[in-house]
Image 1 (cartoon, helix red, strand yellow):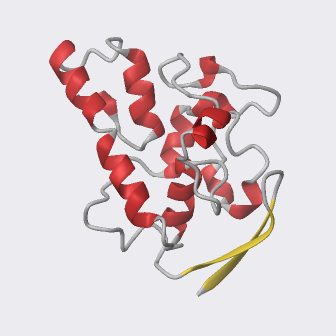
Image 2: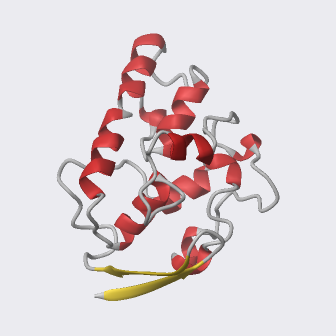
Length: 166
């Protein structure tokens, strides 16, 4: 087991253990199309997410990441639009698990690294539920037209789905 100690702006002294191999041994119902590294390089969350927690994850995840330390910049997103809700909305809706105060993507990064926790099944269900946006894109857009429904496409990207394949 690999222990990880987290000290960033949102968590101090939080510790977890990685018990699965990096990028392997996922729940069979969870088959993300993109890795966290790929998502960061494509452009997610306006570049603001993960700017203060690099020490927790492999340095190569950030080599080509599109990040902005100062503010949320939708131009950094792959589809150039804002498809995010404020963290306060996520908190109000009860979507935040206390061990992952940044939300789903933080959970996914830690899961990818090998952490397993009691919130895994709920997060996998949430991931599966967002797939409905792919159906909406498929019904409304011509195959391969990535300019169609950019907010839906960016939202899917935030959940490790690659809508460029639709």
